[in-house]
Amino acid sequence: MNKVLQSIKEFLADHFNLKDDQADESVIIDSIRKNIEFKGVNLWTLIFAIFIASIGLNVNSTAVIIGAMLISPIMGPIMGVGLGIGINDLELVKKGARSLLLATLIGIITSAIYFSITPLHEAQSELLARTSPSVWDVFIALFGGLAGMVAASRKEKTNVIPGVAIATALIPPLCTAGYGLAIGNWYYVLGALYLYFINSVFIAIATYLISRYLKITKKQFEDIKVEKRVTYYMIIIVIITFLPSIFLAYKIVNKNIFESNAQKFIEEQFVFPNTQVVTKSFVYNNPDKSINVLLFGEQLSKNKIASLNKDLTKYNLKDTKLSIVQGLNARKQIDLNQIKTSILQEVYAKEANGDTTHQINKKVAVPPASEKILSPDSAVLKELKVLYPNIQNFGVGKMIIHHINKSATDTVEMAIAGFKPKFSPKKTHKLQSLLRARYQSDNLKLVVQ
Image (cartoon, rainbow, N blue to C red):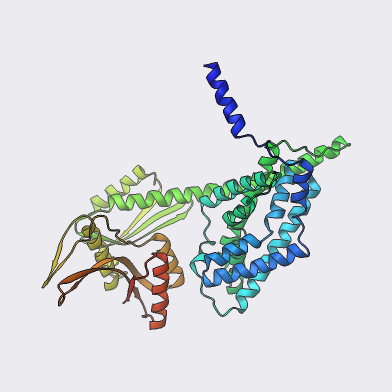
């Protein structure tokens, strides 16, 4: 048994050893230190990268945004802060923090200038994605920072750091904050800076962790008092940086868990033969949490509603308010188009389960079980709501078209959207192009009501 454990230990030590190919400590520190300061080449490169990323966000081009992230030198100051904390180098921390602040301000101002003069002011999906950070952004920044510091400590440099620059995405949030500043939308500004803050903090923490794992020599002071004071400052910096990040991450996790549980609750409990869920929304403002549901069809009884409220605890939704609008109150909030969309979604769902529908003079074929049935994606719905505030309803799926004269059928991917007032043909064409890109279907047809 001891031999087996020893073999396992030797295997792990051999395969997970970071000491192999590790560069000299002086080389590691110098390589990070030289990328900290923002002046001359680094400063101009940052400005160019900000312009490129802003244009990419403006025209919704992922490739252009990735190119900007590869160009940007903004990770240097962040890694400098993390390394400075790890080796007790207060001057390195101060220098990194100053450079990071300068880069942040220049990035926001540059992007704000661009978005103030560009003729394209509509927020695209790539931009909107940077306004609502999630818990996954925390893990991406942490693991990306770990990979970046490991790569920076090697003798042979690889393509890891460019990959980290793409994964952690520091430049796009800055550009999004500049966009929010240009149009006066503080929700965009705060949401984007929130994401930028998460990325910066966890990259610095990851750099600190790897520097301590590699046991890079800490800075020593002749005066013990000075060393204690520096250590004290480092602890304060770590606490000030780390604790808010944990709090923010905790809030993100709780919100995601709540929305996931609420979605599961709606899907499993709101299944009625004569009642249809038209719309649903989840509100998480801790401690105030609520689920809002708009129903159409046969009204639920008071006992049923009471039973639904009781079932909330089964989904870890205790202290969540369930608001159900139905009957006359529901009719005031829905229109015919919303009902059509909900019915179409129900039809597609039944077809997927093998049900058959007959219509006058024609039979609607059921698509093969292996064929994918489209359904409204939550990310697309959120994007449409922001891009088109006057949208009333939206549905997407596959429709069976029967060619009467040819006695043949075709499966057509259809999207139906209702607006008040209606769209112009030009805007309809643009929305159809957007939906085709989102659902990766070049043949998707859009019907605007």
